[in-house]
Length: 301
Image (cartoon, rainbow, N blue to C red; front, top):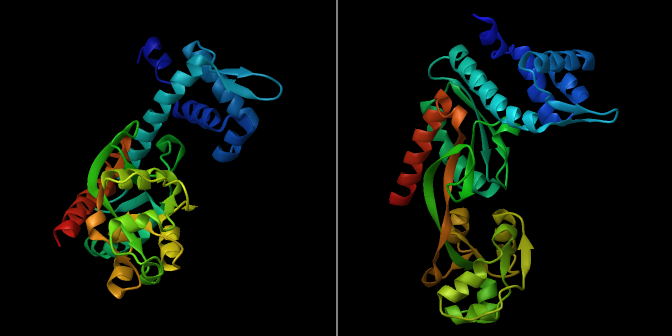
């Protein structure tokens, strides 16, 4: 290897120290994460800067901040280190096994995914799954996650989005609420309390418009998760606009009811999202194939 080639290929210890300090914004926190001293982190980063001939951090007595070059370098190095970690994980685990770290939307996970997951476990006993809840999109580079269930558009930066299913929502409410407000047609929802999801507060407005009604839909209770919306509907606090797959048992048992005529297809959908550097990881590939087939089977059943 020539001198120029060595200059362009810093050691992984230098790169790991840089990536950790850049992500955490602190040499001391990077030292704790990598089980090194702060001085060792500082020396590794200084050696890296000398090797590539660029200043990556601005240093003050109080803190360290990335230079413009450091910000650019961090994006590339984070991706490169993740690729190395994935390749290493693939080679040290057997071909069919390994660990899958999955971020899930709480209600989608508990109401649809978890009841389905036994078939995946039976077919793939050597893959261990660890679940982590999330509500909003996040940066895969900052989370120890292999894949995530996402509701929205197929536009997650730096990731591959695999379509799972569309979402159709319906007005869902308790029989007691129906009796109290004498609900017999769609127009009757103009007089009932409405239940909202904080991330979709315009859904009721769209629903009224699609059904040819003008209505101020801003009133009502607001919740962060569909599970809480469903509980509020069960308690007779208002009418929810939500997918039936989240309240299947309640609808079958008659403790909730719905108006099928008021169905509304959402503009967003559910996706399995995987960072590009994880797409070739065997547990991810296996899980992707299974969940796509399961989602298709669910809607065909």
